Image 1 (spheres, rainbow, N blue to C red):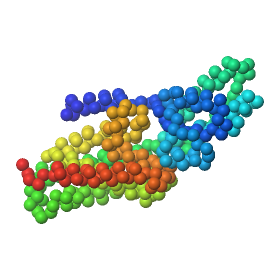
Image 2: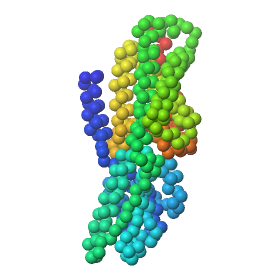
Image 3: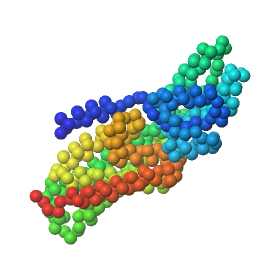
Length: 346
């Protein structure tokens, strides 16, 4: 499996998953004048492969809310009397707002939009002797200094918890089978559900210590803030730890040796978690098949919610979908582990 299947998985994931291009980013527009010039710029943005118009807004006060809700990743704000100012003074202003939680994506999007606006200016200048000027101002929400740690630290937290928890718990039942102590456990009066949950307890405790250590390093050493509720972040992480441990126990229930359990937990999880969780590359840029596969990766839901809590400072309402998905995964994986648990040794 390692020698024959792993190279195939690597070329597929790296070939289709790695892309520095940002496509189909949803953007919103605040356009108080709605004249022919602003509409022309919006149409050029829409017609490109990089942007998809999500909505217009009527109140600038809505801007931060729609970013927090995750509805858009980019915003174009036109000045008052845009076309009229261009005709009278030859100048106008545009504010480009991007979500700075991922500084690489934010800088790429502002670069794309600025290039499209320059193309529009070049077309306009052909119709008159004196050139027009559009002054673009860039604003990065949540991460104005463009610190890379703001994006990577929540992602690395998810990767560490996922891999360590799954790897630790995957050897628990397999070790009992190898040592022959599973026979003693099976003849005890404990039901299978109690055996599975009791196997989670020590690793759950260790995982909480790991989470506390990583979080302290992120805040005090890497200077990544927690703008939202610490209690909400802890709740999210506890649910995610349960999911990761349950996934490891499922692997442990299906194999008979510790080596096989480690191979399944490490080789079977490390590439999907790194490539398909949004840790390194935007999921929206991937083919539809890989986007669908990413939806079953627990780390994808955790990383998105952790970034929103730590960097954007959102409340529980904004990450309710992620909490419900992770909660369902935890229950489903524990139930599946119970079903795969063999009460008789072969």
